[in-house]
Image 1: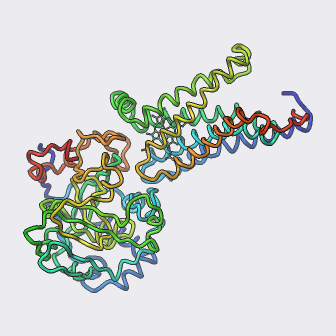
Image 2: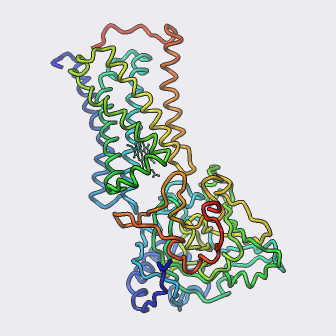
Amino acid sequence: MKNYHYPKIPAAEITPKHLFQARRKFMQTAGGAALAALLPQPLWAAGGFGEIKKSEFSTSEALTPLQSVTGYNNFYEFGTGKDDPAARAGNLKTRPWSVRIEGEVKKPITLDIDQILKIAPLEERIYRLRCVEAWSMVVPWLGFPLAELIKCAEPTGKAKYVEFVSLHDPQQMPGQKSAVLDWPYREGLRLDEAMHPLTLLTVGLYGEVLPPQNGAPLRIVVPWKYGFKSAKSIVAIRFLEQQPTTSWMQAGPSEYGFYANVNPEVDHPRWSQAKERRIGEFLKRKTLMFNGYAEQVAPLYAGMDLARYF
Amino acid sequence: MANVSLDGKALARIKIAAFCLALLPLGKLGFNACLDNLGANPIEKITHVTGFWTLTLLMVTLAATPLRRLSGWSWPIRLRRMLGLFAFGYGSLHLLAYLVLDQFFDWEAIVQDIAKRPYITVGFPAFLLMVPLAVTSTDKMLRRLGGKNWLRLHSLVYPCAIGGVVHYWWLVKKDLSNPLAFASVLAILLGVRVAYRLGGPLFRRPKPARST
Ligand code: HEM
C-alpha cells in the first residue's frame, strides 16, 4: 500500500492568496465581524490564528474551493439538505463554549474553548475528506492532534473508547426538531484511533475560525474514516470501557458500523464505495484504502476482518 | 382538434399553461446550469431534479382520472397524455444524467448498480415500463391496439409509479419525509381507484352533459 507519501510542501504553495481571500470573505459577513470582536487575543492575533505550523501530513492535492467546503455539508442538526447547514447555522452561538471531559478519566473537568486552544499550537492539515455518499473534498483544516487533549485528560487504564457528543439544542439547531437521528449526535473512536497523530481536534479551516456549518467551534477530523465519524460542535468527550453505540449505528446498524473506515472493497448496501466524485471534478476517481492514509493507519487494524468490522 | 367552441379554446389555454409549467423545472435547471449555479455537486443536482419531476409528473398524471371522476371536469383527462410524456421525458433525462454525467458510460459500474443497489434495481425497470407507454401514446397506436388492449397496457403505469416511490424510499439515507409524501399521495391515488371499484355509485357523480 504505497499510495501515501509525506509531501514536503513549500510554505509559499499553501498560504498566500486563497487564504487571504477566504479571510477577507469571512470578515465581510456580519457574523464574522461579531465573532472577531468576541475572540480572545491569542486566537485572533494577526487577523486570524497567527502563526500556523504546516504539517507533513498535508496532501498537495488541489484544495476544494471554500464556497463548496462551506456550502455543501452534511450536518443534520441543521437539516438534511446539503445547503441547509449554510442557510441555517448562522445563529449558532459558539462562544462561550465549554466541553465536558468525563467518564474514565483521573479527574472529570469542563474546559472552556479558550483553554482548549491553549493546549497545543495550531497546525494546518490539508486532508482528503471522503463522505460515505461517495463524494470527496480536500480541506485545509486548522487544529492540533486530539492526542494532545487526551494526554491532558489523563484517561484511566479502563478507558478503551472515546465518545464524542455534539450539541443538542433544537432552538439553535432546527434540524433537531425532527427525529431523523437520535439526538444528541454521538460518535466514537477506539482510544488508539483517537490517539493517532492524524486525528485532528479542529477549530478552523482555510486559515479561519471554523464556520458554524462546518462544526464550529470544535470538531474532530478523522481523515481515514467516512465523514460522519468526524463529530462536529462537540460539547462532551467521554472515555469509556465499552464500545459506544453511535447515532448512525443506531439509525442503521446494517449500513453504518462503528469503524466506518474508508474502504473501496466494502460497499455500503445502497451504493458502491469503489469510486468517488471529488467535488468540482467530472469523472469519478478510484477510492483509496483508508482514504489514502493506509500507510499511517493500516497497522491499527492488523488482523481485523474489515468486511465484518465495517 | 378543430373545435372552435369556447370550451375548446379554454382547453387549449389550459394545455399551453400545463405545457409551460411542466417545462419550467427543466428551464430552471438549464438556466442555472448555464450560470454555473447548481451548487457544489451539479451532477447530483441534475439527477435529483430530473428524478423528482419524473415522479411528480407521474403522480399528476395519475391524478387525472380521480379528478375527473370526483369533479366531473373533463380537462384533466385531456392533459393526461401530455403530462405522461413529460414524465417520460424527465425520466429519460434522469437516466441520461445517470449514464452520462454520473457514471460516464462505466458499463461495469452500471451493471453492478442495477444488480446490487436495490434502489436502482427497482428504478431501472420502473423506467423501462414507461417506454411502451410512451411509444403507444399516439392516437394511431391507440387505434391499432384497440381501446381495451391499450388500457390494459397502460395499467403498467401503476407498477411504474410504485417502483418510482420504492426507488425514492430506498435511496434516501435517513430522512424519509419526501418519499413518505410521495407514498401517501400514491396511496390516495390508488386508494381512490380501489374505492371507486368497490363502492361504485357511492363515488360516481352524474357526468355533466357538457363534456367537450
Ligand atoms: C432508469 C433507471 C434509474 C436510475 C439509474 C436512477 C438513478 C437515480 C440516482 C442515482 C438517484 C440519486 C440517488 C442519490 O443521490 O443517492 C436518483 C434519484 C431519484 N430518482 Fe431515479 N433512477 C432511475 C429511475 C427513476 C424513475 C423511473 C423514477 C420515477 C418514477 C425516479 C425517481 C427518482 C427520484 C424521485 C429521485 C430522488 C430525487 C430527490 O432526491 O429529490 N428514478 N435516481
